[in-house]
Amino acid sequence: MQYTQLGRSGLKVSRLCLGTMNFGPHTEESDAHAIMDSALDSGINFFDTANVYGGTGHRGRTEEILGRWFAAGGGRRERTVLATKLYGSMSDRPNESRLSALNIRRALDASLKRLQTDYIDLYQFHHVDRKTPWEEIWQATDVAVQQGKILYSGSSNFAGWHIAQAQEAAARRHTYGLVSEQSIYNLLNRNVEREVIPAAQHYGLGLIPWSPLQGGLLGGVLREGRGGERRTEGRALEALKQHQEQLRRFEDFAVELAQEPGDVALAWLLHQPAVTAPVVGPRTPDQLDAALRAMDLALDAGALQRLDEIFPGYRTAPEDYAW
Picture 1 (cartoon, rainbow, N blue to C red):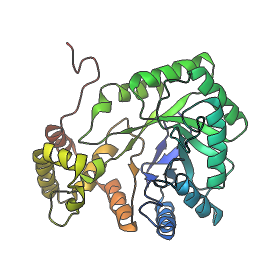
Picture 2: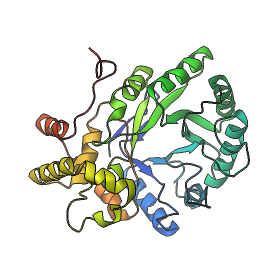
Picture 3: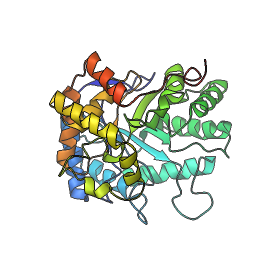
Picture 4: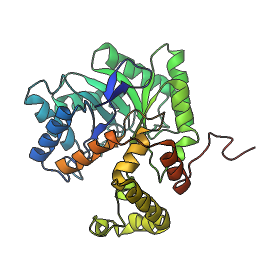
């Protein structure tokens, strides 16, 4: 396993991040524990979750599954860089969502209890809160840091200017600010290249891409027997129709490389200079093994150029859309 610094911090994390959103809704607890054991044994030390994960009516269940895994001992917690998130509603009560000082305090304590740990390595804001000033957010976060309940802060689904807002407010308070941004980023969705990635690089944030295979569309969906039938409804079907020609060219290129399409898509992300660790969310041990294969796949300049031709990216704003 390869390791790198998380943004400008001194924290070392694996180049793959284990996403746990499927644990509970789609993966039974015993299987989730086996996947986490396998991930840790393979060198993946970076685990990502969120307080809302667990499925409709079971928010918090995923954190509880991780908590029971940590409680099993064997150095599991000590060997894991644990990331979780807050923002989404945990109930219909008015102060159990977003980033108010009250919710940060309550949500953090609830996550610590479910996770059966006394600290979170990376506490992430799951979405920008336009109704809470950054001075309040950072004050509450600083208290949590001083209490030893969190070590680092990160963002998720922020625009470039939200990152700038957060970091400038942190600078005014002489506090550390964000060390990471978790955004959707893959060959089919490269929007963050315009402003989010430049902002993250300027302020020293590591990029943690989620949905590296765009919900499975980059995993060989056009091939017979690849599970495409489960993506033939709603927005997934629309996306498949919209990008069918690109996906066909991509899968043909993967054949030329003698590689699986999903391995190529994940390896491409690992070659992007701003990327710290893509979030892989396996439902089964076999899917984890497939993600690990991408670590050993080196794409040369010619291969990267071909992928750019199939899935054109963006230049940094404003040059992308102005002279």
